Length: 328
Image 1 (cartoon, rainbow, N blue to C red):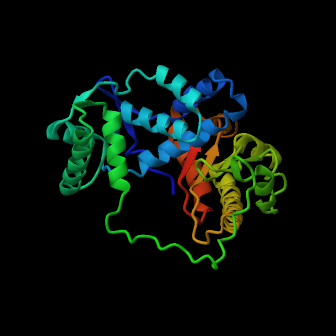
Image 2 (image 1 turned 45 degrees about the vertical axis):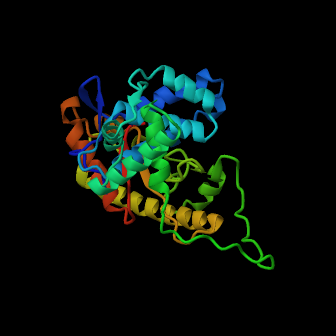
Image 3 (image 1 turned 90 degrees about the vertical axis):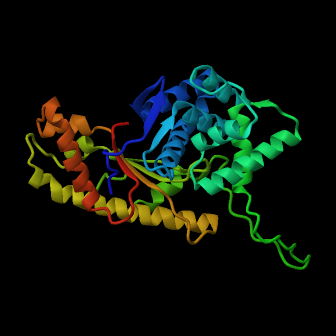
């Protein structure tokens, strides 16, 4: 259930590889929202990071290595498509690795760019390159930015030439019922999510767990579980043993599973999509504090114990779990 750390997402920047840090990207986006005077929209930074991280981790690439330019272009596209142009401009100023060069409109040049940004068979990429090249030649463009080539390729890649032409509905057929609009930014608000949290562990739905509404930008179930607050509620005294906390954390996992079931049911009802799925993210922001205070673990021994405690939580969760994150 916990995503393996043996194959992390890697970014190429300045000729060097580095592990993609979601927290660093989130901080950068928050600064951009604040710089644009949109303090009330800073929460969207988390949704954008999750959307980017999900796209990178579920890419068809086997090696999961991306250029910094690809990451930045993805972030900029999300910001511009959601109406945050000023935030996008501020983000671009701080990303010197973004591709700004112009490339020759030749079969070799177009093919080189598309093979860097797209996955697929050689036949598919050759066809895609030919479509982009034909479009640029029709417009008499001799040099184009990689962004333009990529956007044209996305257009042709999304088009299905064999898709049936939609038939207009007769006037007498009523239009489908509109999905209830909960909020401008949320499909399910935090207040609605709270009603889905099952009773069964006193205080777990309060300061021990932090819930999030289901946003429209990247719909997902997100729950933060605070271990130190849980330990205080249980009146644990240091040092605690692993065999002592395991059954308690398994029970927490069971409750989180039930909460996720209920939230997903609400989401399907509200959206009218009975087969909809929601990625499930669990975070333990105070993991290191808990390990140091209650297991009296040294700094050198944190990493293996983090995984052990996460495994205890995950063993009680019986639904697909995208990731357990230790930290904010």
